[in-house]
Each structure stands twice: as C-alpha cells, then as structure tokens.
Image (cartoon, rainbow, N blue to C red; front, side, top):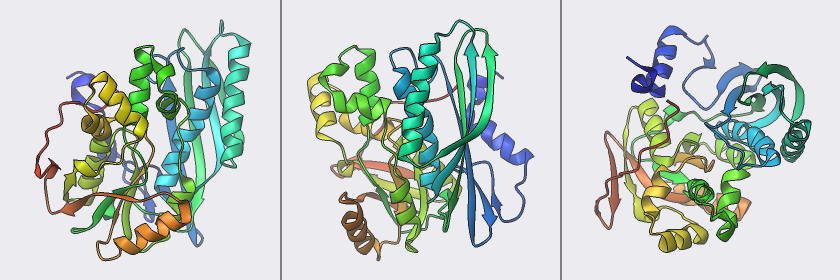
Length: 322
C-alpha cells in the first residue's frame, strides 16, 4: 500500500497505537500536546510548511513568516491556552537570496510581537532544493478543552466566518486576487484567536473545542470521532463574509461547499451545553464584539448536513497531505 492510499488519518491512528501518553497527559490526536503542570497545563504544538505543498512564491516572504507563527498560535488557542515560547527550524537551499530570509523573519517577528511570543532557539540546515519550515510552540493554560469532550445535545458553534481562506487561495491561483483583497488576506495573513480560546475554555458549559484548520467538515469529523458521537448540521447557518458571498456569486462557486470544506480559516469550533448556549453566546459577543454562530447539534451517531431542511451532499474533498 502506498502512503497516498493509506492517508494521514490512518498514519496518525497508527502512531497513537504505538505510543501511549503518560498519565495526566494528552498526546497524539488533538490540536496540541497537553501536560499537567502545577495548577495549570503546559501546551506544546508543532507545524511544518513545505514549499510547493503549503506555499509557493506567490506568497510573500513576510506573509509566510507571519503565517508560520499564526498557524501554531491557533493550535494553542484551540485548547484555551496562551502562546509563549517558539523554536524555529529552517531547511534552506544555499542559493536562496538573503533578502528573502530577512523578509521572512520580518513577518515572523511581527507575529511574535502581536501574540507576545519569544523565539528561544531552533535549527538551521541546508536543503537541496525546497524550503522547509517547522515551528514548535509552547504555551500554557489554566483550563483546557479537548476534542473528546462533546456531549449529546450540545450546540455546535463556530467563532467566525467559514470559507474565506480557501476562496483567497482560489483567487490567487486564478490571478484575480486583487478584486477580493480581504479574501486573499484571510489566506496569506490569517487571524487567530487565543483570547477567544482562553475565554471559551473558562466556561464550564463549553465541552469540546478545536480550531478549523483542515476545513469544517474534516475537523468536525475529527471531533466527532474523538468524542464518539455524531452531529446534525444546518448549512443555512454557516457564517460567511460579504466578500465570499460576492465572489461566489460572481464566479459561480458553491458557497456552502466552500464554507464546509475550506481549510485554514482558524476560527474556533466548539460544543456548548444547549441550556447554557444563549448565556455563553451573549457573553462571547459582549466580550469580543463578534457573535458565536450556532450551526448544529451533537447527536448519537452519523453526520448529516441539511439545507432548507433537506440533506445536502458535499462534493468537494477536504485537503489531504498525501
């Protein structure tokens, strides 16, 4: 069997079967590792970016440096944590222009300053051809929320717009990104939400949480698998930006499929006790001047998408690394 046939999810499941985490620790299979530390938790995450897989020369070095930090901050946010210390590893071709590296670090530093992160070390090695970037980020949390804690009857909610990043990528690929700058920026310099994550983690009626990095459908399936349950999703409730709606209308794209399957939005996906959801949503909007959008309900099994009360199939496949 080839790796492309085995797939990332099966590989991760294999790793989980081979390495049992120590007691009072969460290991492989969540947004980041969680270790008990004093009265709180230590959080550790790592993420890699490979040239021509995750980025091309269409992305500026500054934006790439910023995004390298942001995607890791989102993992920390997904557990309710605060990012703190980073370790950067770079594999670089000898022929790379030094100005590219300086510009990359400019964007990297901007993100570190925005999220109050210190760079403490890492490694620099040579590469035959492609650029390879890996960041390991440490953080801390007073309380954490895992993927595995959803409960039957919970309201499923997301903290922001869905689909903007995928639309931005598609616009860049078609060389028409200048017509929809907000969508392109959603892809190249994504917002991430550690403060929202910390606030949601502090609410006892918020049960499970993760970020939307691989697409709502893909990430929701991971949450449901970890929690041993199912869901009913109302696609008519997907929060989408005016820019995405206009782009879909102009370019004849399927709005709901882009919202459901587009990756790298980095909004937070959470489940909340249904009795307490109005209170949580009101508190969230008061704190962040942004709504917490209910999109469905946790059920015993299965995953159903509905639109206008009827089943809605998804024809767009989520991103796969292999």
